[in-house]
Image 1 (cartoon, rainbow, N blue to C red):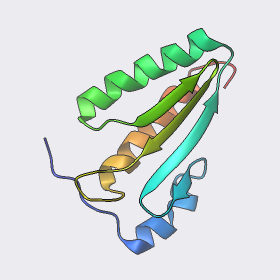
Image 2 (cartoon, rainbow, N blue to C red):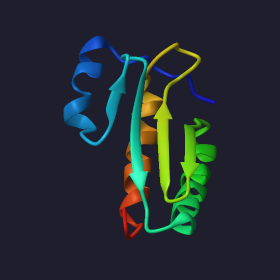
Image 3 (cartoon, rainbow, N blue to C red):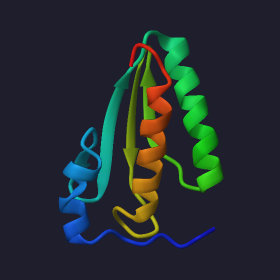
Image 4 (cartoon, rainbow, N blue to C red):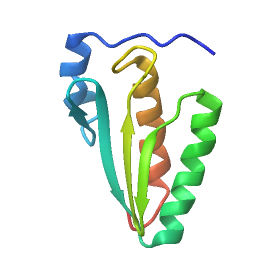
Length: 102
């Protein structure tokens, strides 16, 4: 498991440009909400992201209600945002593209 590198204040401030679909939560996390065609699509999306998270050894905080998935990313080891959160957010964004209705 590689060590997470905390983001600097400048990197956090630039997240609106680098991850425009995500919102910064108290400079300690980023979050994004997704809406899918139905529960099955939402669950398939979560399954795909779970596989990526396992490979990355970095896991989201998330919830699912019917066709909606809310994801929050933070790095507990660093007490805030790290490079691992950025990498996982980019992977989540890539996974979401393949799902119709999102």
